[in-house]
Amino acid sequence: MRLRAVLFDMDGTLLDTAPDFIAICQAMLAERGLPAVDDQLIRGVISGGARAMVASTFAMDPDAEGFEALRLEFLERYQRDCAVHSKLFEGMAELLDDIEKGNLLWGVVTNKPVRFAEPIMQQLGLAERSALLICPDHVKNSKPDPEPLILACKTLDLDPASVLFVGDDLRDIESGRDAGTRTAAVRYGYIHPEDNPNNWGADVVVDHPLDLRKVIDSALCGC
Image: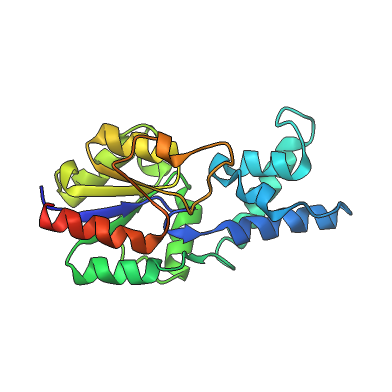
């Protein structure tokens, strides 16, 4: 079936949001007189959300006393500064241009709450270009459940087989596969050092956003 739309996970796939997460974590440490941690320590656990980032930053068990206060402070800071340093990954702007020139739709399906995701899309000038934004607020079950991708396909009135979902986490691939979409895993995202995208069962694995050009071209021509 001919490709009609390309859907992206947000963090680590469409956007490099790590710089904002890292800046917040390092600021929280500095304000407490604690030494900075390696940026990569934070980047490597971004897919685990605020809980994982705070736990790694402070080397703290999530069940420890005081942890929840730190997590809530992190979220409050992120609400205020969620799009200061975030940007499209290198090559992604060109890829989105190609997708639009090819008369394909594109959108975002993310586990990031809408209160963060919408401002980021708006501030980066992507909201008016994206065909949709599906967040946990819109479904009962988030990825890896297929519900977000099923909703996205229904919203676009497209057969899932005509949709490519791109992500940087096993949950993305599982969600897309179970919803019936084609799937692409990216190696450039926020992948835990012990994880390997080659083992996720994606239809294709790419190293760079522009590598998706060949994938899309192949799907367009039915090759």
